[in-house]
Image (cartoon, rainbow over the protein chains, first blue to last red):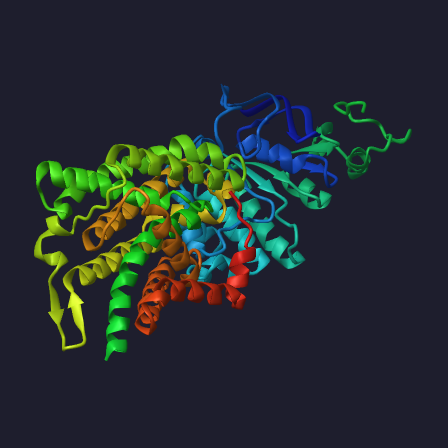
Length: 247
Length: 292
């Protein structure tokens, strides 16, 4: 079942067109990885999908309803949540307050402070600590927990591994994998191709605001993604993936 | 002993300044708006209380009961209609907007009420004139104590609300990062409107007590704005307990200054403000970037 349907979506930063006519769909229960170089427009795309950035053109449909112009705080109520790049916790508030503030207006569901603590046991002893005093990995866990508090049907995760120690990335990914196994629908932006391919069912590669490759992770090789990632022409001995578009 | 009296009177006067500063502090803390019309909104509230008091011949304390909901609604609508639009224009526009609003309110009041100086002291009964006599040097006026108690109750109540309630958490989250607050489902515009409503209501209480313990006229607002602003800065931006302390310090500085020479009263307050600004903490405040 298609949960999210994006059609010809464009978004701008002033004169710079960060997302250029992007179309794709996300099905219920699927995990999609968005990969691409810095500045390819991945973060802008996610922010546009959750309403934090205005769409210049195109439509975003959730369950077939057009939500292109629904404000961000109402999209949370419709079941979309973003774990923003850089974590963006409320620094002066405790871990528990960060979770509670997100849960207040959200639809009721499986996630509350206790279930988040159970999913991220490392947060339990930090409950009453200020977010600004946490390590990067702890902040990232809190940020994911905060997004979960809104009981999303569709979770967007932007660069969870950015700025984290490898061991912290492992534990964050372990938690994410737990969510994915439980049937969550996740769209994640990831620089680390190996991790992206490990967790995702499908990979979408971005180059300069456009989708240059979209394929199930099982049917695509790292080399093919790397070529699309850097915009290099596919070498002759590699069979081009069927969905690859000319740029 | 006259020094002790100066400090006691300053403490009580500071209660009024803290009451004025409360709304200013809240609006700056939540929205990064410096509301230049804050003093005039307080005076507008005082005139409304005066209107109800004189037309119904009731106590001004009782008159606050119907006036407060009106001013809450006024604050809410002010944010929803005027301030929300100006916030979208960057940090300077709200400053200009509230400056314009200040002029509109002052001249509107002047048109309706003339420049006559009024007071609600006489209508408040004996509470505005009576005092406890501690000794030959110190007497403590009832009204001063009442204002201080109300200031502590309002500022303390708001601080508790911010720290403990779900709405308070939303307000703090929006104050820290409105974009991320929206990402967890908090409508910033609604939080802003409620904060403005609370700020305008506290300004009304302050205006009413100014009118009861002293005099007011359509041009009283800007002076109160300056005192409120000084109280906020002395107490440290973004902390309501700090604002209470700042108001009290300002009040004490003024009465102690007046005890040296009556000419130094207001000046002493300004000097304290400038000294605080010159401290390392003050320099941080002065260079803090406003994000709206």
